[in-house]
Length: 108
Length: 116
Image 1 (cartoon, chains in turn green, brown):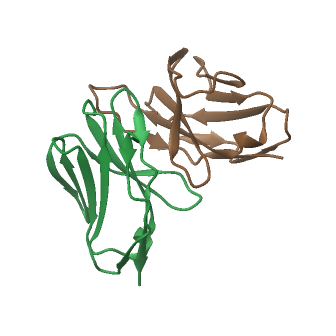
Image 2 (image 1 turned 60 degrees about the horizontal axis):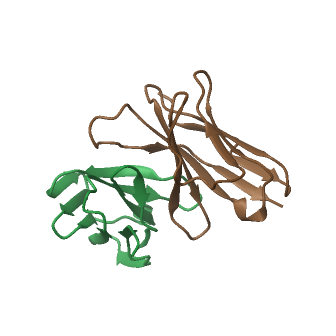
Image 3 (image 1 turned 180 degrees about the vertical axis):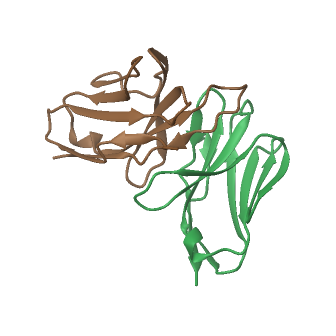
């Protein structure tokens, strides 16, 4: 079992819709969780971090964490074509472990 | 406020040569991490360093790969006797001194290594 799992996609949503990206992790000792956005050929960019159960909102982004279910999600409201990228979920215990990413395609 | 800097951005080597990748962390950051990303694969942790110390090298191949973060100057990831399978994007990330388990890492632009 992979330590951090994501659906590779592509996830296709129309412009203006809500994109929902999901991630599960296997290590119950994981304390901190992160979402990175990576455009093709570019480096990962940190967009959200979450440490406690519940929701955390930042602009159009909402991260959700459920430690009992070992589940992390990222919601992107009012999706824009510029949001089209690969979204990497990462969890940390003693080091940062990344999922393989979900490719999001926002259709104009 | 400069971000994480890496150079070179692109590096071409022939099989058997050495590759040296450099990383300067963000100002105020004392922790450096190296990751490798193969095409169509996720980021894989390689090594975690602080100044003059290797903290965790569990992701580093046992042979040909080494890393350092000297007291002065950038962190260096060194690959000796490169092989075609070493072709990948190598990313460096840095973070401020840890507080508990909070450890946001910020990535540099990466070095794309191509081995001919």
